[in-house]
Every structure is written in C-alpha cells, then in structure tokens.
Image (cartoon, rainbow, N blue to C red; front, side, top):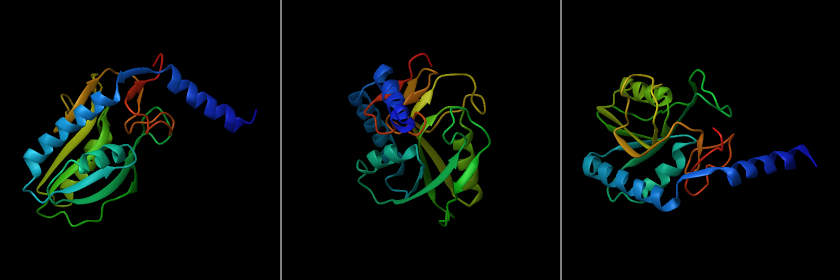
Length: 188
C-alpha cells in the first residue's frame, strides 16, 4: 500500500470515528442566526466583508447568500496553524489591500479558539483606517486560554467544547473542511 493511500485511509478513519457535535441542520440554524444578526447591524452600512482563509471560506460563502444588501467582499490570509494542530506565530500569507477608510468591516472566520489570528486581523484592519471592525465566527470554543480574558466575537453561531474540531470550514490536517456538520476527533 502506498503512503498516499495509507494517509487517505487514516484521514477517512478520523472522520468515521469522530464524534458529531453539531449536525448539518444545527449548523445551518446557527448560520441563519448569525446572518440575521449581521443583517440587522450592517444592512445599511455598505460593509466590506473579509473572509479569513481558509477556514472562513465556507462560512463566508454560506452567509453571503443570506444577505439581501449591498456589500463588498475580500479576503485575508493569516494563520497560526498551517497544517499543524498547535498554533505558533501569526503568518500573513495575504494582506488586505482595499481602502478601508471610513468603512464598516466584517471579518468572518470558522472558529474562535485562542483568538490570536482574529485579533491580529482586527488590529490590522483598524490600523488601516476602518471605522469599525466586527467579527463573526461559526464556533467559539469553550476554554480559558483566550488571547485576552472574555474574548468573544461580535456574532457567534455555536459554543462547543474544547476538542479538536473539524467540518463546516474547520480542518483536520488540511482535510474535512467540507464535512457537513461539526465533528470532534475521537479522544481529542
């Protein structure tokens, strides 16, 4: 058996053995709640929406279809994880180049774990002249290791336990962002 096939079997085994913490319907309901709250807050603000790549891509796409107001879309790519399961220093892979002066900005990401990446993005966007920077995440992971005490996103879909999560944008070693629902790796 080649190493590639063994690797893919291991990735499949992780999904097959995972604990489902939120099924697809639960995730969809959470996205509906986030979209309604964002719409109430930003529908008249001419917002610029930034998706944090790669995790925020799926949530951003699902939210955009629920917004019935004009907005601009862009992305940024900042990461602490890469393919690792432990965070390190923030690495900027794509810095926003839009004119942010006087704008309302929404930053969308998959998960608020410690929050270092989200805070770095917010600080950068504020430093570029945005009037306000709001944040939206699908999942806020419950633990006390946040980058600062009581750190919360402005819009949150679900609060889930402190486990290794994947699905609905979150990944396991680069895989399973596409899983319908949110899963926890067995034993982690």
